[in-house]
Image (cartoon, rainbow, N blue to C red):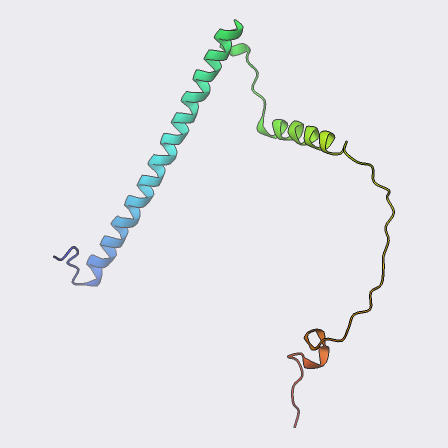
Length: 115
């Protein structure tokens, strides 16, 4: 059973273009579906919250994503830095390393034999 009967380059290019366009159309359709679903969920959630609190839908304030991220990061830093007190003393100890041919510069790749 032969699926594609391509005999010349023109048919191959047209088939490739059709395939690529189908993929991009499918991706654009999925993006639009997800955007529409997101808008629907946000509107229905705002209506439920407004009905629950007895407010109108226009009175609900939207907070930007960067503001939420800043507040979340501030709370994270505040609660995680409460656990210990640091001494602010830095100690540097010198350790003598044994000779190893792996870190020796004489075996590097830049040593060229000169004639």
